[in-house]
Image (cartoon, rainbow, N blue to C red; front, side, top):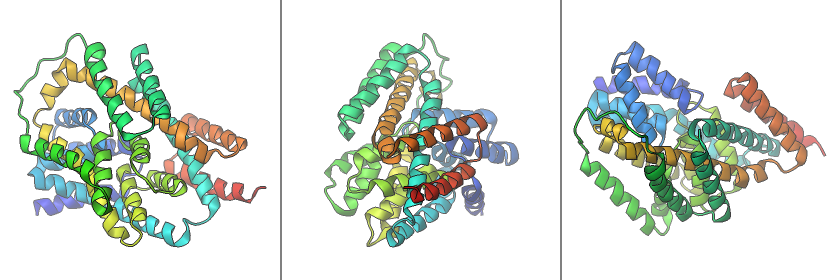
Amino acid sequence: MKLLSLFYQFFLLGCTSFGGPAAHLGYFQRHFVENKQWLSQQQYGHLISLSQLLPGPGSSQVGFAIGLHHAGVLGGIVAFVGFTLPSMLIMVLLAVGAQQLGWGLSGLIIGLKLFAVVIVTDALITMTKNFCPNWQTKALALLSALALIFVPSLYTQLAILAVAGVTGAWLLKPMECAESESPTRLNWPALLLFSVLFLLTFSAASGYWQLAGQFYQAGSLVFGGGHVVLPLLDTILTGVDSDAFLSGYAAAQAIPGPMFTFATYLGAIMTPHAPLLGATLATLAIFTPGFLLVIGFHRHWQSLLSNPLVAGVSKAINAAVVGFIAAALYNPIIPAGVSQWWYGLVAIIGLWVLRQYKPPILMVIASFAALGLLLAKLP
């Protein structure tokens, strides 16, 4: 009954949690801390802090950790399934519709791609303010963006993250941190499994193993949540039509639940002969590494947060993530979405409205979809 209740609570949130990762954290706070009192405010804050230091889907990692705290590993799995299932089913249906109907009218594609330009630009501005407060982090973000623009590949991203980590440990660590309240207690089997699976992804040459390997790599390397997975998947995946790619990403903004179910959509369109199987493999592969890391480190959170080296590495990686988003905006998002100069004007106006008035995200998407239909009819 405990697990059934856990599934029900997360399933309800999965059906109603619009607004992206930041909004999800607010939903979890109200539901599980204030209403259900499954954990204290301090415990919840620790889970959020840990999720920011690990790669993977931040809000989904927090949800998984709540389930882990409440009912062990099985509780974490149940929480993940409940929260992710609604958006996963929606993305599969959208992918099947895209295959059979060519994703609908061309005007809808125009509108969704313009929306992607606006939403990613907004994320870039916000994350620059939050993660690049000084000239060192701004320079790191700029150099990361330039490196990825001129040498776009997975290995470039790996090199950037490695260099950023070393730079952060050297230059960005704080002068002092709070002392750790507990000794180190790592779950080594979970961390070993994460590492072995990551190494195996590089030997997956074709078929479903290659599909799972590509998404596992993405889930292992993406710091910063939903928006950051866009440039990483664009670098790693091959053979995905750019219109379908950006349309699916835009659709992921409009549905409840985690944005990482963008992988569900991509897995389905990459396996048109078995879309449900491809969607399931892609979904499990992109979420699994983040959850293994939560299991590995969740008892070690205080030591992580109190270590100056880790704090410096975290700051540097966050800055590099800003560069990744800037590179993705430069290519492919802007070239695909702004095919005419006045499309750029529309995007600028849309960005201003979004930042000035903060309308509901569903209203923004509906507006861009309608605008796209109108633009398609113009000469």
